[in-house]
Amino acid sequence: MFLHVSDAHYLDDYKVEVLFNDGRKGIADLSSALEGPAFQQLQDITVFAQLRVDKELDTIVWPNGADFAPEFFYFQAFKNVPDLQAQFRQWGYIA
Image 1: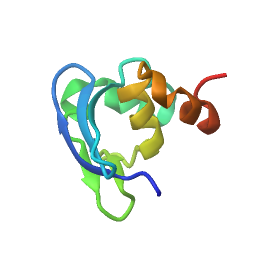
Image 2: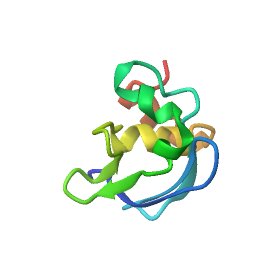
Image 3: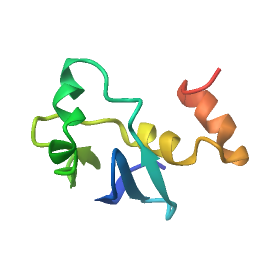
């Protein structure tokens, strides 16, 4: 099964509540992920809060064209869930 972002809502700071197509819902904190030129504008909370789910890309996007893979949001939301560690290793998010 391919992972998709089904729904997302801005919460506060750099936190997003994300619903995935596998039925899991979690909170992804992106405060440490907004590095580099593509994400510089998102450091402005008013821009960050303008996120939306792109149904063609099946992930969260911002008006400036920035996005992350659905798997990255999944990792950010569930990185401390023990039964998902093998999946995160497979995706290359942990060693």
